Amino acid sequence: MKEQFTTTVKVSGKGDSKARAFSDALSRVQNTLLKSTNKVLLRIEPQDVKVVQAREGVRTEKFLFFFLARERRSYSIELEVTVIVSVIDVDKVDFITQ
Image 1 (cartoon, rainbow, N blue to C red):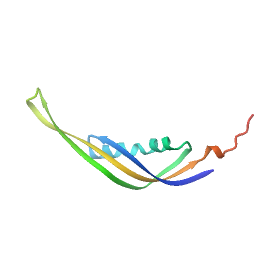
Image 2 (image 1 turned 120 degrees about the vertical axis):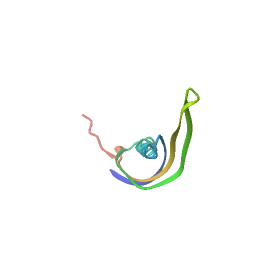
Image 3 (image 1 turned 180 degrees about the vertical axis):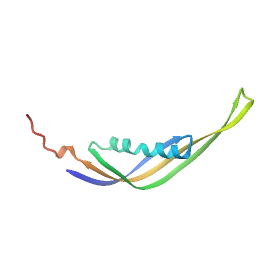
Image 4 (image 1 turned 60 degrees about the vertical axis):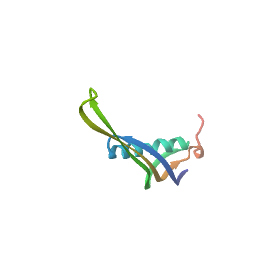
């Protein structure tokens, strides 16, 4: 009934800081796993995180096209996360009809 397997998930995230980009990417691991299986997830345990691609974008903003110039930075990251997943296979549970 309870099963455990290892899988690799590719996720990406964006943010206005490096930490927010990482956080956004890691928060998408569970949703990606839920889409790939129809079993009930008990536990997701990350084993390894590999950075596939990390980008920093810089653009200059100006007030009224001339005044108060400032740089705005945005970060995007693509990760490959290896996880150990514990699941319950609902198909193997015997339900009693009443």
